[in-house]
Length: 201
Image 1: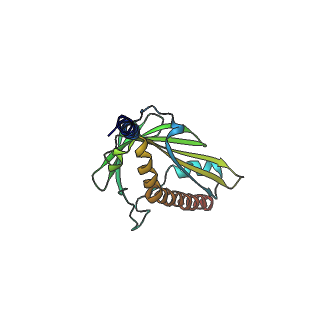
Image 2: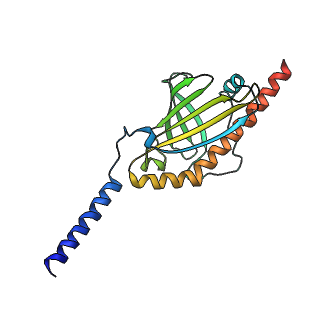
Image 3: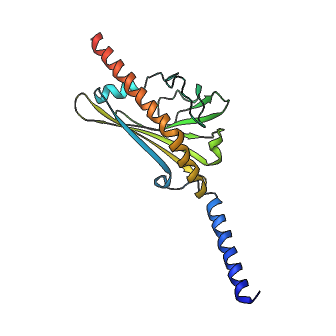
């Protein structure tokens, strides 16, 4: 084998090695949130903004999925206060799943009646191999006196470039369906509670 062919082979191997390192090398945990993998869904709730904010924060979603199972996302069985009573920024709680897995959920921002943001860290779920942490954000906006637009965004801080592929696959196969079901339940229960409050008046 002549020197030129050897040089081409070595150069090719070096490029392949560099690509492998680039794809699998851990990303910074301080990566700009705009670079995280995201999904956003939205819906309209037939209730005024302030009522939607108040009622949506006090809903019971246990069993809301019925018999539906979500791939790689076990059922939440309970929560336990960790810091504070989970009512203000800085408070946190431990979330327990049917598989025995846990994660810590912390409130980042509360700006009633427009914004609620939280962060998920220290997961023991299998997704931990691809994600450092995740954030959720609810944004509420009045459409008129009787309707509210709710936008829900989930962001995942990937561990590396390859992780983005698996996170996106997880979102497409599981998380989007789960979020859609949860937001639908939020809409149904909030509207029901709002109608009941009108009857009581």
